[in-house]
Structure formats: structure tokens, C-alpha cells
Length: 306
Image (cartoon, rainbow, N blue to C red; front, side, top):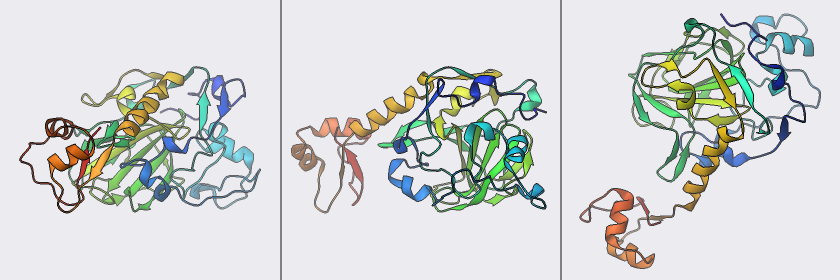
């Protein structure tokens, strides 16, 4: 098993020459993107210099900063341990100005695919919104496993993610597992790669049983397909390099999503009327939206026109 402190290279310590603090709240969100960002961020304040709360396993004694550094995965990187807020609203985001190498595994037992299901929705723009993870097919009740060794930071119900678990790992990453039907772990609980975190489901803002799976570093989302071969269920490599280019795809995808324009169908709308309104053609609308000219336009449907 991978032990605390053995996987992060010295450059992961937050020196000013390596990481420059930025705030980019637009880089966050859940399965439906920026418009539900506020719903995903819980209120959280902490006095400057306050120690992290002790995990349950150590709650019977006084907890100090040295304990946080010793027992909490990657505490020297994140500088906080919050068991209530899924995302902290950009307070822990950083701009990467140098390459950081994370050791993901030494042996095959050091990692696991959360579930064996095939990819149903990838990372990136989806219907005009950003999708910051991948959706993997599963059936309600299927086991969902931890990707790496680590400690559970979040285990709660959220109106967007449903039953959700977030694990912080010793390699510096955090992984998120959403829409579970049941959670089987608690905050502060140590887990190993392959340990069952909960059972697959269809809770929260979800349509059909699936696992929404995210990989993040300092709250910045990373395309899970850069880390895992999602079809084979294996790591692409035993290490992962994080640099400015790692998050370039986010910026490009956000720019693409923001450039798209949509019309919300109202009573009496037709494709030809929408096309005239925005100076385009019916055929162009059909091509952008993957629809036929004879398609019925239900009220509230979003029609992309640019």
C-alpha cells in the first residue's frame, strides 16, 4: 500500500516560486456546470491559523497542526481539511507555474477503477455546459470503489450530486463519486485502493443509474481520461505530470461553451422563426442541434443557434 509522504515530490510544497494563488470560481461546478456552482459550494469559514478538525479515529484527544500534517493526506498542499464543503469556492485554487510530478502507483494494487462500466458521457462541454467529470455506466447497487489510497473527506447528501463521497489521496489528488444510492464510509475514514465507498445509484440531479466521477488537484478539475484508460480500467502511467497545459483544456472548453448561444423555446416558436430571429437557417439549426426539420419543439427546450 502507498503510505503518507512517499508519493509527493518536494516541489509539491507550496513555495511562491511554484504556485501563485489565483481565484477562478468559473473553473468549478458539478455535473451541470457553472450555473449550479453556488448550489454546490457550502458556507465555510475558518479563523486564520486554525487547525483542521480531527478525523473520527483521532477525536478522543487534542488535535494540533503537527497531527494534521502527519495524519491527513496532502495537508501540506491543501492547508485545510473540511468535511462539510465539497468545494471551497476557489479559496484553495492555485495557478500552476511549474511541472509537478505525482506518483500515482508503484504496484497494480495501488489503484482501482471506481466501477467497471463503460463511458456514457465524457469530460468537457455538454449541451452548452461544462461537465467536469465522466459518467460511467453502472446498475443501482453496484459497488463503487476508491481509486487510490487516502482518507474520506466528504460523505454526505447533496441536492445536485445526490449521495456523494470525496476522497483525498496521498498522491495529492482528490476524487469525487456522485449519485450513489448508499454511502458506506464516513469522513476521516482511511481507505485503500479498491475499498468500497458506496453503491451505485441515481440520486441527486441525475437521469438513470450512473457514476459521476471526478479527479481534481487543488480543486482544479482534471479530465479523468488523462489519468485512467477508462475502457481498460487501468492507469495510463504510474505517475502524472501537472503543469499549465493540464488545465488548458478547461480554459478552451469554457471558451467554447461560452461562445455557444441558445434560444429557449416559447409558445408559438418554430424553427423558421428562430432562424429568422438570429440570422441563420433552419438547416444550420438542425445541424447544430442534431435534429430534423420536422422535429417538435417542446416548451423550454434549448435550441443552439451559434
